[in-house]
Length: 205
Image (cartoon, rainbow, N blue to C red; front, side, top):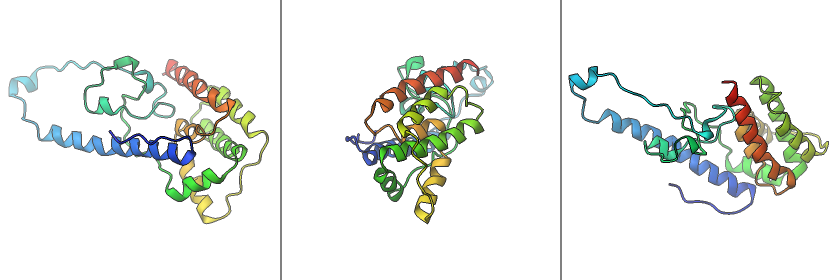
């Protein structure tokens, strides 16, 4: 597994998340190659019906919009946590959008209210697009409280437009993750609120 990057700054947290994402994305094709190179099954084995047990982990709830990142152990075929795993056990065919170094610097330079205002705006758009606005109400209310009426930061130059474009491609869960390095009462409430949202989305799937 990639080394854990410690630190409470936004840059450190996003670096850690990017490290895990890159590891997961590189792991999937390697496992596929191993399967293709495996010894072929006999004709009798090929014709025998295969029993498949689908285990939906807690981290998979709300897939693909509000689930957690993929479980690296499940990709390797041996997650011992099963249904209790806090990470996603379902397929993520598309690569998650990643912030580059300059974009992470721009976000780190924002004040906390500005960062929450930007995240609030993009999260509202995303929740509406995905038909989850009602289920996202608690999360949205926390973002509104932390933004405190601060306007969305100006996105006039090329770098900030690129930042906004990358953020707009993120899932709802990933968007919320971009503010979770900022210490506040609101941040402390975001994670459990997002967990309750995952459960509500999962209950109707």
